[in-house]
Structure formats: structure tokens, C-alpha cells
Length: 423
Ligand code: AMP
Ligand code: GLY
Image (cartoon, rainbow, N blue to C red; front, side, top):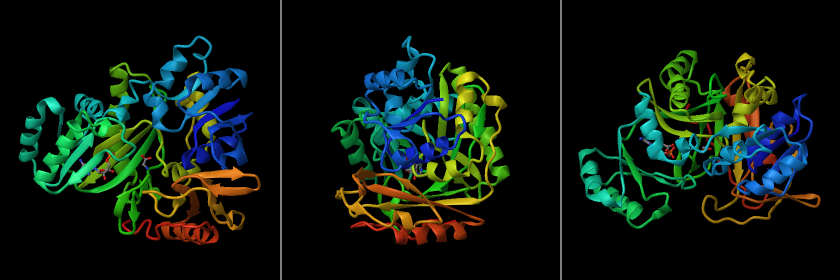
């Protein structure tokens, strides 16, 4: 079949790398893609939110399956755009409906969903500028640290964790009354602080049955020891050592099953990935957030551990055979290290020549922010390259990724040398 992947990061390169290996894959396109996706498929210059151009392309190239990488087009309703169009309705689009995407697009929607279906999560209340005074009172009833979340999408920046009550009140006001995160923060969710280790579990569902993909842990801060500013992610490890079979069974019972059944009960169409961000509070898993897509860089460790044919699984979502398919996972540990541009996540320069990629032999090189210019590959984003390796244990695998990281060069290159330090 002909396949189109939407997106341009390391996640999309990992998807493309895996799908290109499938015997069912005829032609593979990535929009807009990067220098890495161009090695395994054909990049096309269409933006992920340009639904009309996507439609034209899908019809012209006889695309049968569209895999949506990032959340933006999902929250903007690309699933409904396909299902409501006579020419597109029979094309399989992997991703939730616009309503399902609200699990990520609105923190308040996600919280209400979890409470409605008895899914363990932090206590919360939601506020707007119209009940700001009640927000202050609620903050006074909590103990520090205070967790404030912009309701809408804020490019990963909408969560504030503050130790000082007055500062929390000031920030709440800045968010709801002064549009600190634009309209995304006109509603703010304030929630109880949960103390524990985070991990992510990933689920693929056809809306009826589901399969649990490998768990992973990512490292979001720019600095070693988890310090400094938040980034899109500086590295990831799969599996997460404490998330053994018994733990995952508990997560399945208390969180995954009620989530998939809750979507069904609420009549929300959902055929795609669910990324559940969890925090482990004294052995009890609680949901911090839902994302309606795979994570980046988690995809770069989760997808390579899948031994089964991913496209075959995705095809099953479209033709109703998903529940019959097997999902086989490698026992090996996968780690990925992200090489970023100097200055990231604040301002950084693009267009630096990248050398040494061909010297890497022990890792898979997934491109994130790169661009091909003639014979040369140049940096084109904050996160530039993900280096994924396998090992019998975490340290074996990490050693390969770190050795590979030394072989690639570009001006300003930075990476964290302590990924996995806390496990
Ligand atoms: P989110 O965008 O909801 O994933 O939040 C970003 C980060 O804030 C999470 O990865 C956690 O590290 C942290 N966080 C979010 N909610 C809580 C909470 N209730 N308690 C403690 N940490 C939290
Ligand atoms: N790595 C976190 C995310 O993709 O949202």
C-alpha cells in the first residue's frame, strides 16, 4: 500500500524507517519530512496543517494510509476532515477524532474524562478570569509546590510548578487574565503535586481493542541531573526498569482499560496511539497527561523494539483485523541520545553542516531537525539527531549511543552525557 506520514521530526523518521521495511509498503511519502526520511521514502513539501493540499496529494498518489505524527493536525480535526469527505472517507487515517484529540488539546477535558471513568490522577480544579478569586482560595488550600497548567496547547511550555504561594497567584493571574500563553491559558487547571518517578506507556488502539507498546522514559531538561529549561526531550530509554510485567498489568487494569472503554462509552472515535504520561507515586501509577500521538524522542526507542510489522498492525486498524494481529517486542534495551544545536531550547542557529554520520555503525541515526542541501546535510532545528542503540542492558546500549554521538560533528553540538543516570 501507499503510505503518507505527516511530520518532520525524529519520531517521523523512526516511523518511516520502520514502515519502509514492511513487505506491504509500496510507496512511502513523508510531509514535509527531513534529510533522514528522504533516505527511506520521498519527502513532499506540504505542511501538516494544510488539509486541502494533503487531500490533493492523497488522491493523486493513491495513498491508502495516513499516519499523523504531531498533535497539531489532530487537534485541528484532520481525522474528521477525512471522515467527512466522500473521496477520503475510506482512507485509513491513524489518529483520534477531533474530540478524542481533546485529551491532549484540553487539560480540563482530559481531567473530566479521567474523573468520569475513575482513572487515577491528581485532584484539580479549573479556573478562568471570571473566577480568579476562587482560584486564589484553591491555591491557599493546597500545599507547595503548586502545579498550574494552561488548558490548551502551549508547545510544551504551559505547565508551571511553583514553590511560592504568592508567585503561584501572580502566575495564575498572568495566565488567565493577561494571556501569558495566549488563548491556551484562558482556562487554567490547578492540580495537586504528585511526587514520584515518571514513565510513559504507549497504547495503539482501533477504538475497540488495544495493544500495549513498550514503556519508555524521556529526559526533558536541557542540563545534566535534570536541571535547566524544558526541551522537547534530550534522550529516552525503553524499557523502564521498574515497569515490570506486574506493574504494567496494574497500569493496564487501572488506566489503559478504563481509558479505551471510556472513549467507547463517550462515543469518541479513536484509532491511533495514546501516550499516557504517568507518575509512580509509591507504587501507584497516576496519569499526569494524555498525548494523542507518539512521543518524541520516545518513538525512537519504542518503535525499534517492535519486531512485528508495524504497517501490518496499522493496516489492521483500517480493515478491522487489528485485534487478531500479534505484537512482538524485542527483549533488548534501547536508548537514544539527542544531539541539539547550541543555545537550544532558547535561540539557536540553523544551517550548520553536519559531518560524520557515515562513521556511525553501532547506532541507528534518526534525523530530527536536518535538511539536505545538495550533497550536504545541515542542521535545521533545535533537536538535530537522535542516536538509538540496542544492548543487553542499559549501560551497553548507552555506551554505543555516546560513542556514536562523538563521531558526528556540527558547530554548537550539545548532548546530555547522563541519560539514564537515575535508573
Ligand atoms: P505535562 O505537560 O502535563 O506533561 O506536564 C509537564 C511536566 O510537569 C510533567 O512531565 C511533570 O514532570 C510535571 N507535572 C505535571 N503535572 C504534575 C503534577 N500533578 N505533579 C507533579 N509534577 C507534575
Ligand atoms: N517527549 C515528550 C513528548 O513527545 O511530548
